[in-house]
Image (tube, rainbow over all chains, first blue to last red; front, side, top):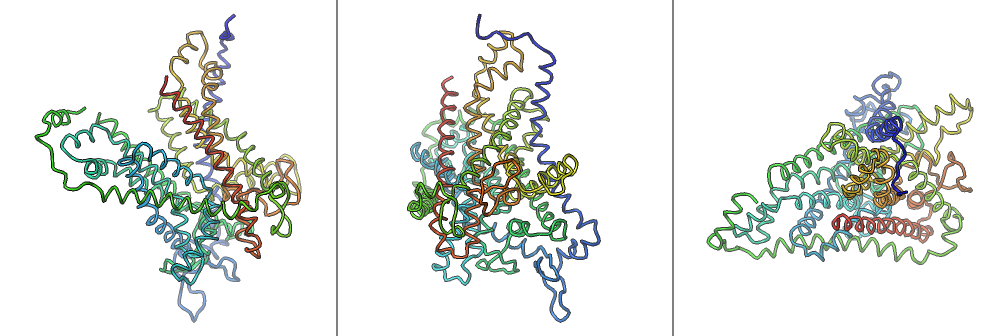
Length: 319
Length: 316
């Protein structure tokens, strides 16, 4: 008797087994669809219910509103006042400002490190860089938020003489720490996937190593690096715990980068627990969730398409 | 090698350009980016280590919080975290593994189905964690849980239609699904063709080959995926804050519909809601240290197993 004696084939078992595996394989797809359906479902009263629209309509969430007759119209997010105000502009502005600071901080560092790792680093150096990036990626965002709240905020306030301890600069830098690994990984992958024949050609033409990198590899990998930046931006927009803990959470309209600010994601996290089930406020929070979902969905789709094209170009036409 | 390369190579020194610079500046600039990143990571880790090491003791790890979290330990949070990720692994990993098996064994990598599923997986990985939290609340609690309560139990008080550890675990299982799939797929790719061929040659069907040959061979990769999922899931706070995590509970969760305390959520609560942050600080740092050690240890084990799989793939 060999250990590899199989039972007689059962066509039924084979058929059911395959179907069972196939059903599981569609879980991710079904999950994406369900996420959209169930979040949008809770946001629909904004478009359909006149009761909800009295407090929060698309118009009221977008344009300046005159709240008091003797004062100028303004954008205001005050869902818990006697006359709830649901303007999304302060939140949009806070989100964008935090993401911009995060990108300005993270992109140069991540791309610089990726260039060094892919082009200049010795094998031993690379064995240090890779685990460092993995460690950074492994830090839970709540720990980065904690660090920004307790340590970084005090440091920045003392160093720059800021009025507010918790502000968008503080949150943006901590957010940057969270997206460095994303940009680094995608950018480094793109540079490593540039075919060796291209490098060889440049080297054969007499370019020295850094000339090969900057005139050959970088331009060829540019779409991939751009995709890394876009994916990092998507993560920065959706990241919650860091901005919730480090930004100060004041929903104000301001152009300053050292004021407190509140982001879309932090608003959901801070307010959903206390909201009345089915109220206009509840619907608006799910509407914000829908916006976040759609935005990150498009960003990820775009980034993925760029990366796939790059892969086809490097592996299809060349080599 | 393409034609122009061959030509360029054959011409030799005649085409040699004089380099204009040694490349010291680009090399130095990019190296400094690396050094800054390493330094920042070191500052964070040393700060947590310095602040938290003094707090760690057997009492801290085994006792519940006291005096509004200014004293005592974090045992309920550790227990809740372990319970949570166990449920998450039990529900999420099988689905992820079967997805990877389907993509790798049943469909061609270029087929339409594969492309759609793959796009869905990539997009699932990019959905913000707070959106998972909203989904968990709307779907698991509001739809499934409330549905069970009203149609099956006819309960007047919510039994399943309320925040509970099972809903938080299911939400996290969805969030970590892409991690499991990617990791399993890598393991599947490392299985030598000959093993599968031998199995078929012995008369095994596809399903038998999958159950007896492919999945056992992929176990290290599946294990890696599960560990990475745990390390990711143990650190996520936004998806569980509305689906089951509690500020403080005097009891440990015993049933699937109990609420629970969790390390990451405990860090968030202590650092933002504490009336006197200076008094809470030692415990706060201790909790962060425990959370970091937990996630890093898990990551480290996963990296070790993964590098073993990769070296096996090269040797075959």
